[in-house]
Image (cartoon, rainbow, N blue to C red; front, top):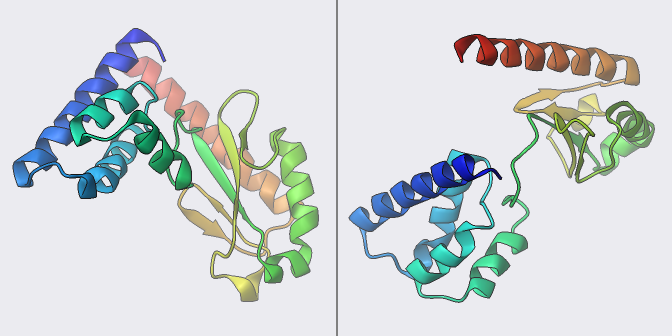
Length: 175
C-alpha cells in the first residue's frame, strides 16, 4: 500500500471509529461491527490498522488479527476488481461443476482463493448459490449465473474484461 492510500485508509478507519463511538462506548462487542464497516468502506482491513484497533478496543493485536483471520469474509489485502465465485456444492458438481472449475482456473490463470496475474480477478469457492436446479452456478461480483458452461463462462468474463477496461478509461478521463 502506498503512503497516500495508507493515510486515506487510516482517515476512513478513524471516521468509522468515531461514528461508532458516538453511538456507544467502544467495547469489545463492537469489534466485529467496526471490522465489517471498515471492510465495507475500504474493501479490506489494512494490516497497518490492526495495532490502532487493538489499542482502541483495549485488546491485543493478536486478538484483532485472530478475529480478522478467523472469519473468511474479512480480507487483509485489497480485493480484485472482479470476484468469481464458483459453486462447489454437490448439485453443481454433479452437473459439470468440476469440469467448469478446471476451465475457470485455466481461463483466469489462478487457483481458488487466489488472484489472476493482473489482479483483476479473484477466484473463490462458495458452497451453494441456491440455484441447484439450474446447476452449475457461479456468481460474478453480485450477479448469479446458472447453467454455466465453459463457453458461457468465457463470454461472461469477456463482458467483465470490457467493463473493467471501460471503468479504467473513465477513471483516466476523470483524472
